[in-house]
Amino acid sequence: MRVTFTLFSIVIFAMTTGHLSAQFPSEWKQVIDKNNVEVFVHQCHEMNVRAFKAVTTVSMSIDSVEAIFDKVEDYPSWQSSVKESRVVHRTSDDRYHYYSRTTQGWPAKDRDLIWAVQKSWDENTATLVYDQVCSTNTLPEKKSEGGLAAQAFVSWRLEPTAENEVKITYNLTVQQGGRVPNWLIAMLSADGPYKTLASLKEQEIKGDGNSSAAME
Image (cartoon, rainbow, N blue to C red; front, side):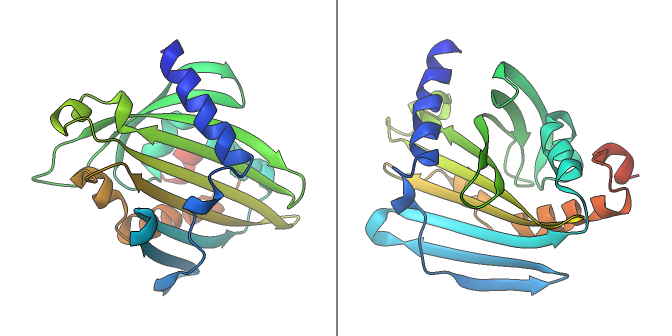
């Protein structure tokens, strides 16, 4: 785990310092706009990058939203396709790895993924950021794909726009080092981010960051 964490730390550092900014495309096509949730998709063949971006606003304080994101074990209650999640390695409250079991539905099989997370406050934009990276380099599937690597990058940006209002932007970018695995392509479906943000908006009912109680 120490070797894996070092690798992911380097990648996340590059993301947060802008070294991988070229992986996030600038032109988007809107595919969903309903219930105060917008989803955009983009495919850039030149850079072998596929991505989506989803945006919404929730009527909650930034502290309440942060509490929801920090409760990794509750992710299955609001993140689409996530069936199980837990922290498996923690360096600090702002740097950790978590395991997630995800599914794209029958007949696809569940996937065991490890995400490295770096949480930070972007003073330039007054935004709380959760950067995540998952690489097939660390997964058993790599052996069956001829050593071709694909990486998934997630960036959650939580921007307080009022005392009890937060704009949430959810980016997922897949950069392929060869053939993109089917399970990664499935993650880029627009339905997933829409369902995730729609479920996250349901937390407004409770409004205190207790996601388990809010979903009851």
